[in-house]
Image (tube, rainbow, N blue to C red):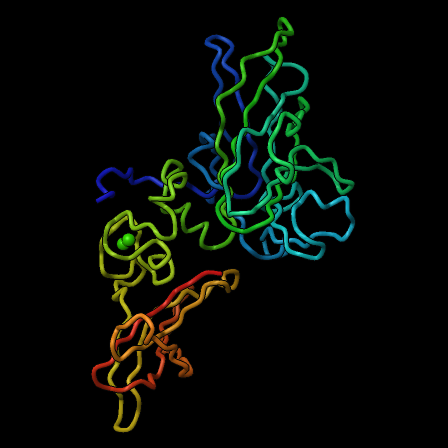
Length: 340
Ligand SMILES: [Ca+2]
Ligand SMILES: [Ca+2]
């Protein structure tokens, strides 16, 4: 079982005006990437960057989200999707803003921020740009090279971080500066990992796993079952489980995680299969389907087409019941959960 080896910590969401601050220690030649931001209680924070995630709700900027639409002009091809398609941008002017702090006084001139690596949804493209012209600093549509660099001026400066898919992204950056005293170049920093969690499911992952776990699909991937309870992470997310606890109950309300058969409430009415489902406006992609089979044979499963009934609802959850058309005796049911 994986659980014994897993640290209990997860990432904290940092929202609002967040400033990245790569700091060079002149005395010992090391770098540390930290952040400046304010938490929900307006406490000033200076956390190491790898303990945070930057959440991007899959909604319009006017609703505190990061989902935008790609302009038609070919100047925007670098974003990696067709014109008028969605693009998720942590923009310098939005609520989910991630910028860079003013450079420490021991360094002078530009700080070279370079792109080390990016992991994210398959086929996705990451880019960093400024302005509406735009000026491109980094783009992975043509791979990663020394050309992917942001020459950060000494003053506090903000950029736009663009992603062509929603999901969980890890952007690794390095920094190098010039010593004010001698003009000599500093060593290049170790890569710092910035986690951008776009959409509800990615935010759930970042709220449940730390950076090392998020980097390991055998722990945090949809098909993984790190607590060994038989529910993979996609099902834990979709039904309300805890991916680090082998409880058979939902974390939110202690109700059973597993779908249940409900007997007819009156003579002549159908049996129903009941389950919990997540109702998040930004996550319409999650699909729940009830299937039945008289034999369990792989080819014998058919989709139940009864009209769902909402039995109860609370916050982001609904308990629904599907009237079952299948035979009432000797029949098997299963709940299928999928993402496109
Ligand atoms: Ca599990
Ligand atoms: Ca679990």
